[in-house]
Each structure stands twice: as structure tokens, then as C-alpha cells.
Picture 1 (cartoon, rainbow, N blue to C red):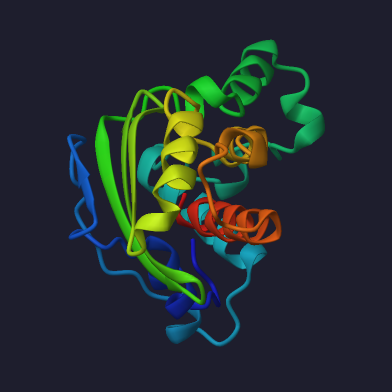
Picture 2 (picture 1 turned 180 degrees about the vertical axis):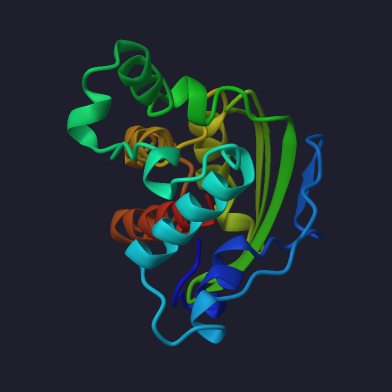
Length: 202
């Protein structure tokens, strides 16, 4: 139900760059959406719910003649739900990582970005919510040691923001190796930039 929603924002959130995301999941079919406000200047959440109730009653309970007898309205709120153990159990389940990410089909995500310190290409492969492979390709070869350390840190991690943050934090300076000629302060800045970029792409 969209009453007065910013449709441009919805398009922004739902838009997927198909060239950069390759998935084995079932492709969704786009459908047109509109605001009810375009058809009624007085529509509200309450009036919409009442209209749905009346149409449902007229369609399924037309054997009754007195509309007051047709349906008993039940308000489904937090208090009502809290009395149904199965619903509570389901609500808890859909908040878990296993439900949100664990059943994600296998996919490949390609990213690229120009930072003030250089250009980077990234390739992520994921299955069942875990990162199975990572390739970070810098434009400058002197960054290779750092990027290899970050690839090793990210591989096998859960594909979520917290896990990626932990992986990058654990791959700090000591994992870069003594062969790096990059100043420590620059390494920290690059890791911060990469971490923010990767998490925004999730």
C-alpha cells in the first residue's frame, strides 16, 4: 500500500546494475507502482483499511444482509501478536542472519571505484551468505601486498557489514607484510576507504 510515497527513492533502492551482479537466483519481474494519492486527495491509512475490509466483506460474505453482521474486525497489533507463540517464533526467525543471508543464491558482484590514492577493481563471489572468493585489483602494483592481505582476510567471511568490518580490522598493518613501502598512516586510510566502499555496496 503506497499512499504518498517517494517513488523516485523506491526506484533508487530497487535498481540493480545487472552488468555488475551475476546471480543464479530467480530473476524478479518488475511491476508498475503508483501512489493512491494520485486517485484520491483524501485517502489515508485508516480509510484504505476500511475500504479493503468493506470490499472483502462484500465479496466473501454476501450471504449476509446486515453489513454489521458481516465481519468482526480484529486489530492485529503488537499486543495481539504477542499472544501467538508461532508468530513470535517466526518474527524472531526472519531477523536471524541465517534467514536473511544464509539462503542467498550464489552470485558474483563486480565493483570499481576511483579513490584519491588510486583506482580499484573488486570481484566478490558469494554462496549461502559467505564470501567464497575475493579479488582486489589495484592500478598501482605497490598496493598488491596490501590487497592480497585483505583478500585473505575477507575470504570465508559472512557477507554482511559486521563481518566485513571485523575482517578488515583484523587485517590491519601487521598483515600487510614488511615488504610494503606504503606508510602506515596511508595503509590505514586505504583500508578505511575500502571498507566503507565495500560495505556501501552490500
